[in-house]
Image 1 (cartoon, one colour):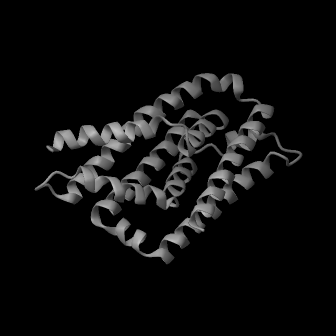
Image 2 (cartoon, one colour; image 1 turned 180 degrees about the vertical axis):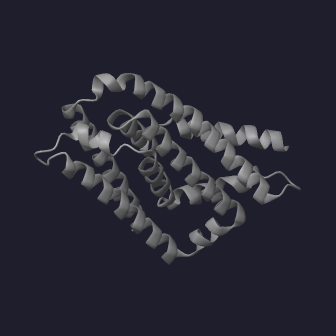
Length: 209
């Protein structure tokens, strides 16, 4: 297998995973509709930086050490589950507070830094990304090639696909945002996204048991 064939084969695998709706999709849609397009792209950038970090960890063997250490893996899984569930619950609780216009609050808090940190931390607290890379990347490293170089290259391909696909979703959501950016709709979007985060957190914790 040549390097070009490895990149193409890996792109097909992660491309299918990228287009499947998941937590990343929910985060960027929610950020774009309830905040702004800038917030959505900032969250997307944070997600992809987290992906690159996991790719580097897998390529350098750090992810293998994490998978080999049951205690470390369990701690990170529970930390990620707690973070996701806590963030989801906070989103839901906020929508029931009286005396606040969710639309106004959203606009006031719509900044790129918070969106970036949301995407980054959400990705880094999910060790399943690292384990996925650890299981797949070695299969696509051609003989004679540097595992670190190929690992980073494949992670970059994954990031590129994510940027394109989720970027298109953000642009589409941004076109619909003016029709959806009302107090009532924002409340229900936050409740729905919060519920998704709680479910992802619960599933992550349950799978560790």
